[in-house]
Length: 152
Image (cartoon, rainbow, N blue to C red; front, side):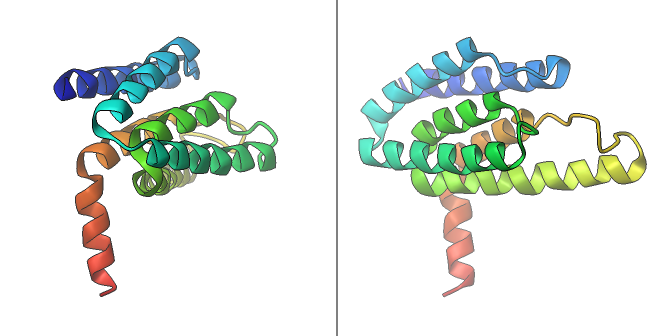
C-alpha cells in the first residue's frame, strides 16, 4: 500500500509540475486525488494530528502570502500547500515551504537577472512546491535530523 500511495503522490506532483509550467494552472482534480491519497496515507502510516497541523500551517502561510501579494501568487498554490500539509505534517510541511521558497526565489532572481523573465512575467511556483514536497516526504526526516544536529 505504501508504494502505491507514494506512486500516486509522485505522479500527481509530476502532473502539477507539467501543467503549471505549460499552462500556469494547478488543476483541482489533481489536487483532489492527491488529497484523497493523503487521507489514506495518514490513515495507514501517519498521525491525524500531524496532518491537521501540517495542512493548517502550510495553508496559513500560503494564504498570508497570497493576500499580501494581492493575487501575485495563484490560489492553486494555496490549495496545493493545504494538501501537501496533509501528507507531510507540521515539520516536513514547513521544510517543504522553506525549500520551495529558497529554490523558487533563487531561480526567480536568476531568471530576472539574466533577462529571461521580467518583473511583469509570471513565474510558476507550483513546480517548486512539488519538488520540495517530494524531497520532504522522501528525505525530510534525514534533512531535519541533519539540520538540528548542526545546533547541538
